[in-house]
Image (cartoon, rainbow, N blue to C red):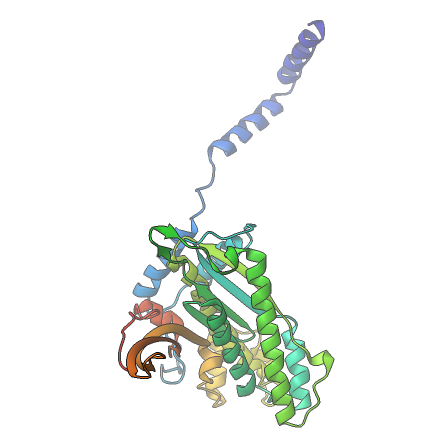
Length: 348
């Protein structure tokens, strides 16, 4: 008891002798009371994203008409950065299983592809500059992953792809599970392994067609990260974010691949996207190839077709699922409410 009283007395003396301590404590209390506004939730950001896309107009760039390069509704870079941070944060949440009522995104990215594609171009497997062969392999891999995961839609640009898996069905009032029981590790490893194997299979076929020996050092690999969301709009925000990235990177890629062929390409690389587009137009390098400029977006739809009854051998009408590409700028499609068109069952 005597020690406690002594400590209290010493504390009182110290505070009385040092008014600066009181000032510091007051400042700390003020800072605690003036807490920053609570960060927006992903759902709030997603609603804001779709609203901005609906109400904003494309940016006007002098000398760049829409038939030369389609520009989507303009949203500030800071907003896209906020969306990207929120989505990456969602992907970083550690869970073992995703419940069946949640929507899932699988985002795959090539590992060390800048170096790999340069080597393949030097060997003559891919063209120098933009390569239609590389783009087609990525498109084929994207639709294959859609089929494997029974995804609702998918998007690919450059060396990455994103698939969106819908919530699992509710059957007789019971919520079903996602494939692989929704286990995150299974979903990611299966997706990465499937795309790695398929990309290398198609790369080997391309090398053989061009008489080039496929070496072990040319093997590609992909990683995969999973995000899970309460709503389809939140999951689709991943696709929109990657499409916005394509609008910047596709233009930069076109300038970069002109380096060494055209004077000034190296200097223009550090300029803004607007400046790069004007430089590309001045050098007759627009329009870009559709996949380079916008990426490729695919959706699953249903069509009325003709099938054969295995018991009777008769032709009967049936509904089949198929994967169809939706052309156009993904951000514009979202702005017009046509990102996921209403499914119409029509005769094929």
